[in-house]
Image (cartoon, rainbow, N blue to C red; front, side):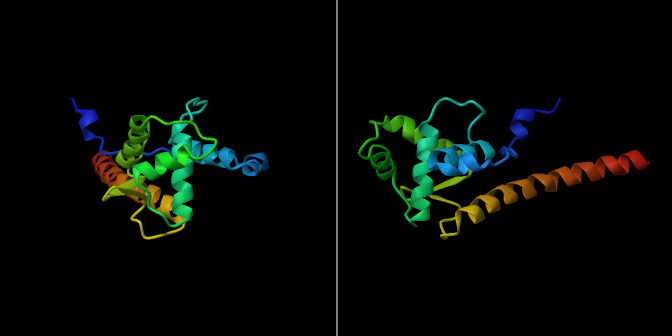
Length: 151
């Protein structure tokens, strides 16, 4: 029996969603749509902290800033925002880091390799690299099967 769980190096999920015009009317709707499309949340997810953190990270990225955990929490708690549990914020940051979407270096967070690429390029590169890596092994397995079937 193959120890399947031990073979999994990482997982990615991409959902192909329609993008209606009304989604593009509000930033929060766009952030939720992106998180759902990129597999960061499940459909009908009711918890919003991850979405709020993702929104803050996207804002910092657009401004060319690599924030610390404290700066992220401060932004979440900015006037009008509610007090955040630092452990919960760190949990979601760690989850995004473990997925490989976010990088943490010297206490600062950034998307990609921190080279200032546009958001579409950062996410396209991340998902394309993960997909290419997975398909390298998938192709190897399929070739082995194909050759075996021909004999």
